Amino acid sequence: MFSARTFLRMIFFDIDGTLIDHASASALASLSFYDHFFGSVAFPREDFPEVWEGIVDKHFNRYCRGEISIWEQRRSRMREVFGDESLPDWECDSRYQVYIQEYESLTRAYDDAAPYINEFEGTPLGIISNGARDQQIGKLDRAGLLKHFSVLVFSEDIGIGKPARRIFEEACRLAGANPSECVHVGDDLAADVTGSLNAGMQPIWLDRTGKGGLSEPTVRIIHLGELGNALRGELVR
Image (cartoon, rainbow, N blue to C red; front, side):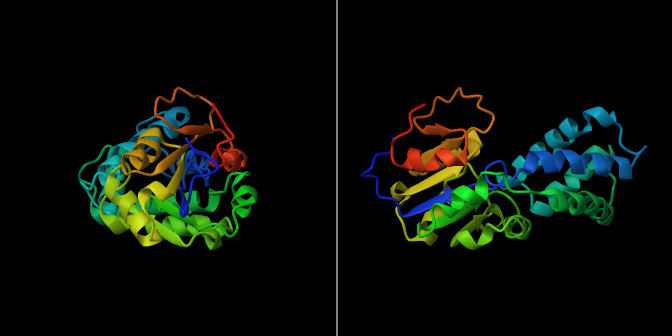
């Protein structure tokens, strides 16, 4: 738990699901993708956003574990979506661009991101994200949030993603801080909460759905407006 005496050198944030509404953008972009390739995707349209996200998670998790490259996981997605393992790389890349261009046009910050990030002006802030560097920086830039962060660490830089300790340790190293002096705020229990806790950081779970059920010894917030109180040890859930 936090207390008023807690000394913080850096507050790190996850991006997707924490600052940026990935889920809404992905669902809408997946339907646009489906319509673009209508007749070639062997799933019902009404089920496709959920199917798409499951396929994305499956291969993205392989990438985060360091098993495949960022482009290999994108190509694996395309081959599974179209049910064709023989799709050449160039064709997979071309089809992926149809999705990503639409997705990037739809990404938006959550309504509580900018106002409450601004509250921490003067406090060192950082990013730890499993996403691709250029893509994630683009999201933050378009949302007007990039200027707030002095340390940005991506799985692409490290060769492995959250929840591996190494990405959190590298972020703390770049911040010039001991992990115990750093907070990590994120929405994913395994990647953000358990990962940062195992690295010796102080996790805060942003439970935007309000589903609860956390067994880890950490603070749960449901809105970034609660972050200040959580850091001061005034919030108990």
